[in-house]
Image (tube, rainbow, N blue to C red; front, side, top):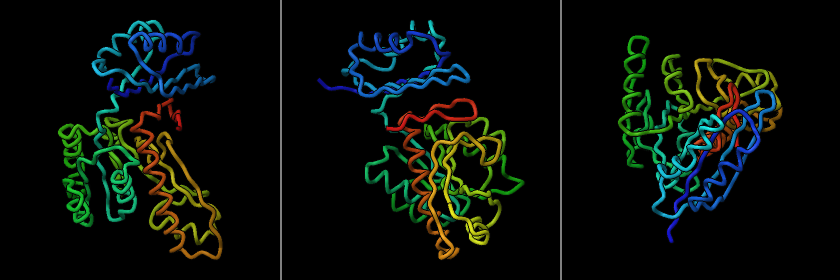
Length: 285
């Protein structure tokens, strides 16, 4: 018998019996649970649950939703059901630095990241050849103060036309407006260099080198109107030393950014990330 894999994620106020109610209903429709993760946030009394399971062919999302509706209504759950047979579609946005984008494309080609890049959007021509080699539509939209609203409207249209469920800012060096950030909240992931202290503006790695920083790193996070302060999905740091040049810092930073962004995208697409106010709950494998 062929089987189909689904993931259910849900959140609600914590009460006794939530897991039992959900798993009992899943068992009743023939689900074979492959993975289950849960978390109780004691400060907010919110409960988070992710269950991955197999179902015989013929039982789809509608059947799962009907089976879980009594439990959902009883506990006031906010619930999402994902069919993992449907390959998620993503849009990648990039400027001149393409290392993070190239890493995502490679991980898709290697099979580690299960996604389809339906478009690459840039404000430069630099990555057109890469897009053509991969057979991905490439859009160059120059962004200025005068046309920013128009170009963001084009992005919203592209998301709708392609059915993309995620926009990945792979070192896209344009700040999204507050309006767009709010409309696509939870659907846009950005990669940002992160240092202690924080260095903003041009050439952050060179600034870090001049200040004798000992750790450099990167943060993958959801985009919000608060610049580079959205809910964090993934982070990584690496120790550096006085013997390294500024170019060494840049090279190390490129590697970290690429890895962190790819991991953040993978965890999001596998429904392992759940928003919890200004934070995230991340159910790692």
